[in-house]
Image (tube, rainbow over all chains, first blue to last red):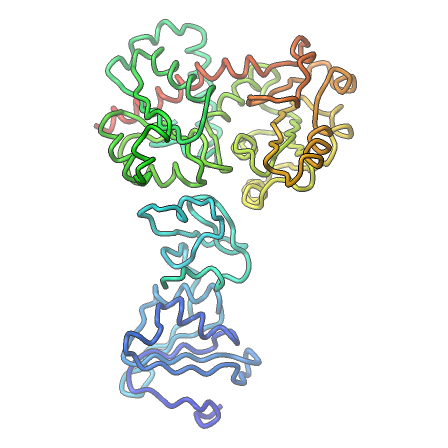
Length: 154
Length: 307
């Protein structure tokens, strides 16, 4: 597919997250804590045609190289995503996302009676299990729609 | 048992459980021998919810080990009322005591508390989560009466919110036990406990009525269905009535069936059952002393060894 079709220009330096599950680009940015206020150049393409996925999203973040641990959590909503690190318009590293063992501080526990939803100085922590993710404190399992549980301050 | 804290029953291996039960039996045989074991130790009782049995039995257990207890009192009379976080409360209390027994209305409270302190934390109930020290005395009672292997146990009542049920179900996966869960549809086991049981490869069956499974059971563990779980009084009365035991119900039971209950009961076991050989629930409550003495012995000795 050409860049013309994508309608998103190449970036000089930064990170391109490709093969994101269609419709999940904004959630990917939420997970990464990027909302534009940092002043980073951010472009997204949503539901663009893809040979592999049918439809995919693409997220380009300029002047920031995302680490593997930062991007692994994306695998929870976009398991096919690939991460390209760009320097001077060239791809210098290309990686797939791996499922992390734990997700810390990103998600809110949907159990309102969980201690992490009280007024306590503790970050949420979820362990990644076969069925989804599981609160390390109260044991609640989130199976679907993980993006709905991204903590509001992300 | 080598554990720093007791937070959930899932952390306990069969070897851990057997070590505590064996020690409890040793203590039960001669409690006086243990009377000065921890004569310099203090146990903090932090109960953010009401308790009779658990609090009193930990208090007695510590005193019978020669130690003393310090009690936070009720939430109304403590600094929690002023808005203090649990994390701050336990960090203050660890300076006063060698171990903390904690009951709190939020799930995960004990797990979080343990992350903030260096003294052992015992979860004495966290919301609808876990109550693992109750489970140890439940297992002790089961072992004394019918043994812990090749067993069919029925667990009946409020399986959704019942923390004693969750801990017991988790712990029983360490043994050759067939678990039958008997409850109204709306109070079935929660997803996270099902997940644990599935992961452990437990033998589990679910039922909405007791009759079909009663003749197979060696143990029937009854729990209270609480009024507040139902939107209206009539629905509560109708459903709760279906999960009550009386002498007539037991006509179909095995001769050696052991009936247990974490107590308090309201009307789920008819008082007429108390005088039958099936009734083991008062014995179960009494077993809280040797079992909690054994548990404290393991946790406090670990604590001493690490100093």
